Amino acid sequence: MAEIASWNGHSFTVSPKLIRGFTGLTIKGSSETEDKTSDGQKYVSRKNSNPSEITLTAELNALTGCDVKNEALKFVDEARSGAKNYFYMGGKKLITCQLMLTEASVSETTIAPNGTWISCKVKLTMKQCAKYDGTGSSSSSSSSSSGSSSSSSGSKKTSTKKTSTTTTKKTTTAAVVGAVAGAVAAVAKTATTVVKAVSAASKTASALKTAVAAVNNAKKTSSTTKKTSVVSKVTSAIKNKIKALKK
Image (cartoon, rainbow, N blue to C red; front, side):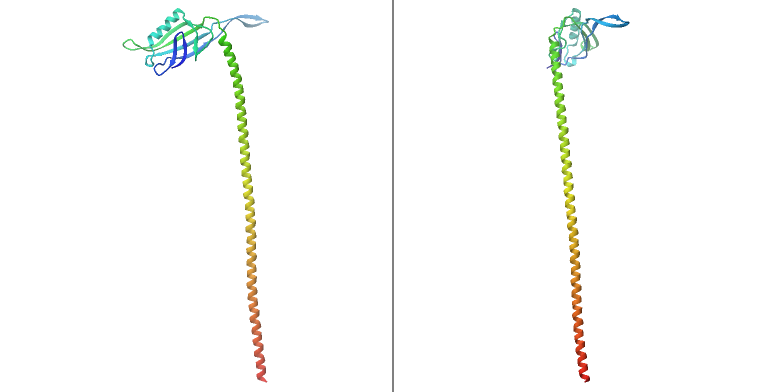
């Protein structure tokens, strides 16, 4: 059973079998002052502190396990008798002084035809009825201070982590960019080499083609020269035979 708050035997809880809650918690603190005047200026001066005051509205419902009528009337009786006690919230004193129930007002009552109270709201007003004992105040102050300190250190750590994360991200990004740039440069270099190789191969192929053409031409020329030489020789022989016959 989770107890949210308690006062003088009244427990505001939430459990599978019982829900007794409250709304509108208000805590009030003030000072008694007196008016003073100096050099034509009016100001106030503190005389005493006024009693601290807490107000809240208890919500009672039979459907959530509350005995609506008895609990509501008990608050009213305690307000009439001036019941007092510490108000606890989360297991700790909300204010380090006892509070007296000075008013309990029942409203929005829903009653069944048989007279059973189904639900209602009880507005409670509690006021300081003793001096602050000082224990909760100092411990609260010190814990608040330590909380601030830890919060500060926590924020510093968080800041450091954020900075570290940011730096890591920047470093990682720079590394990735550098790697990509290096890869691009390598690809470009390889492409250039390939282009040069292709160009060289093209030139070599062209040169080979030219050489082959030259060889073919040379062969043709040689063949033609040989044929011409043979024809010349035959012609010369024929001429010689004709000359011999004439004689």
